[in-house]
Length: 222
Image 1 (cartoon, rainbow, N blue to C red):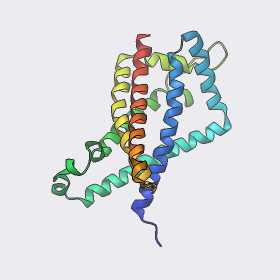
Image 2: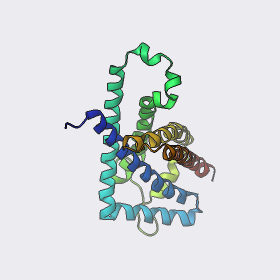
Image 3: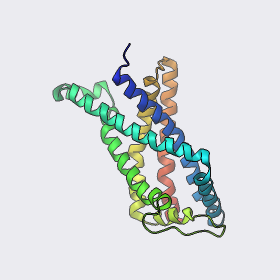
């Protein structure tokens, strides 16, 4: 039996999306270090970043992360294009709000906003620290690359802080809808379980969006 292309694409989106959800938990936990007093936070944050860059296992996970982002974006784009071609405009506009939420109708737009954030975020952090593009970061007293200073200085730019925080809104919407639908795409249809999952997805999305969104402002006013 031939594999259904749509099912395959949705499975890839769901699997990579769930992996990225786990990554966000780890990422937010690391960002919480920035809330500690500077004399503690700088050394801890830099040593943590160094350990991630130099650990062979973490390097493998990092490559899986990059591949997951690319696959998630590409297959989501393919499904969005397919859906637009498959449904006439008049049909999609007819009682759309009764059939699905605003978020599910606009996952393409929300995805583009998140992709914009990822590009800007990588250009300011990953490209500078990993690729040496732009102003080279310094070193702390322990000889580690001063990632704390790079992060802290960016969060002293109010425009970047606002940009960062505002785009956590579409991230929260995307996570809420994606986490609920992701398990369905993987074959989970237990009705009671789905109701519980919907609550968990809402809590998770709120923690991620508020957590990532508020830390830049706390650092800015610190």
